[in-house]
Length: 295
Image (tube, rainbow, N blue to C red; front, side, top):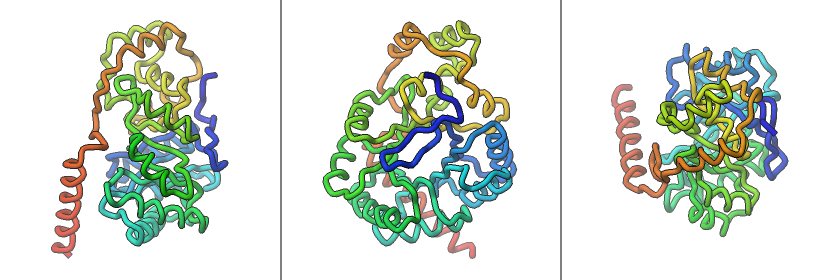
């Protein structure tokens, strides 16, 4: 059955997360964040996904309050960045995130990347936050099977969700099998492959067949696979389009054609790319030092 913006996925701990949310990656200007969030709330969105490294949590919190809906209607998710991983560091980082968002609790808190030598301690701290009721659910992002296997070997609480790059070019079929086995929800970031699929002739033909937009076809593909999607957009028309997917349904032939688009290639960083993490942490330290020097 085709999912709508009102439909929710029940996580293994009983929490319910909307299938369709708004990603707020690389939104920094306050007017654009407020405009996008308020537009999304008016279109029926209730899931909003941000992260500490996006440097917009405070603005997201302000935009959410400007949306005029009750807090209990919303599902707010954020993530801990690499430089804040570790047990004590995670507890401090979480308090900073709550303060920035101006919230008393978070609906979902994720480890942003599987930073080797750190994510086990980070997870212990997140388990404490969950036990204390500061967050309703805890999960991970960008964890591959081997990262999850290592984490599950010591975890007292299972991650309820793994948010990973997923799209027709990178369907993550093997990881999905692992997640299903362990009752872990699959959420997709970059569900449109950063726009690289918008000119794909196969998807364009399918869109024309159904009288739909190309991005709607891709998002429908995700939903039919029972995947939580978090597309990012600041365009009013696109936000509304992404919320209205129930007027058509892909058939077996469509799904077969889309399955042939797989390349296995990432449009973002590979979670096993240690050089990426080291470089990103170096940049972060330089930014923090520059901020201290300019005080």
